[in-house]
Amino acid sequence: MASSIELICVGNELLIGKIVNTNAQWLAKRIITLGLNTQRITIIGDNVDAISTALQEAIQRNPSFIITTGGLGPTFDDKTLEGIAKALERKLETHDQALKMVREKYRQYVKEGRMEKVELTPHRVKMAKLPKGAEPLFNPVGTAPGVIIKHNDTTIIALPGVPSEMKAIFEESVALMLKQVAGNVTFFETSLYVTGIGESTVAPLIDRVMHDNPYVYIKSHPKGEERIPHLELHLSTTAENSGLAKKRVSRALIQLSDIVQANGGKLKPHKVKP
Image 1 (tube, rainbow, N blue to C red):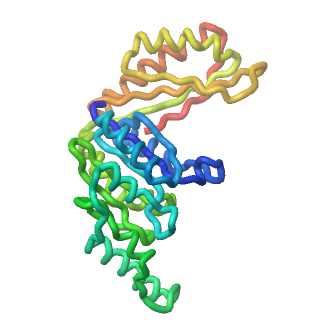
Image 2: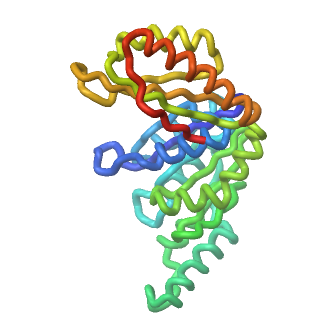
Image 3: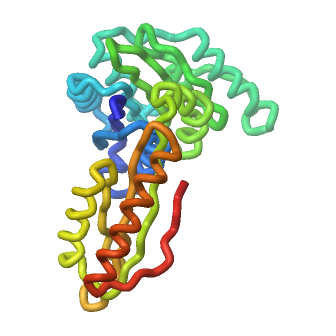
């Protein structure tokens, strides 16, 4: 896959183990199903210099997209846009459309009885201050807009850290964009569940099948104790169309099943994930 993506997840809470980084897991899974490849996931704290440095390093690797999560809110530690602006050497400016989005959200909250009046405090206006040249992405769930900005050949997309907001903006404004870049490329995966054979025994068998099926990636995942081997063998590929992807995986699956059983393994029903 020619187009690749890097994820930069921002938040001290991720670094101290308070919050599990489910955003990265969800995005990586969603990105591969769209036909693109996540080549790196970076986690950093709420620090402008750290955000700027991580972004600059990612840009040097020339990915098609860099997606950040977290740090778009109104509080003092929401510093992602400041970090992006520093990395790109651009000024932060109040964006009229972004400010309108924020204002409309607070008007909605007033109508719903969640607030008494609309007041655009400096902390709320902060969510509409974007790096020069950036555009806001509508947030269907929360207040802070997402942000998109082009830098040379890389598109940078900043999403909120709240999972429901991140997912909503991604599905509404980002998924189609990524799919258009991927074209007809399709991801296909399946799993083979094996008992009675250890991972060290399976390893050379996987090597042989991958050698014979160079477009299929096979990864073993131990599911039980070593004295009672239970493995998930995960097969995946990407191809120009779904038919070719399924054909590749099916061929590798048949070969792997045969070779595992010939070496004493027992198969359990496998799950196909389109």
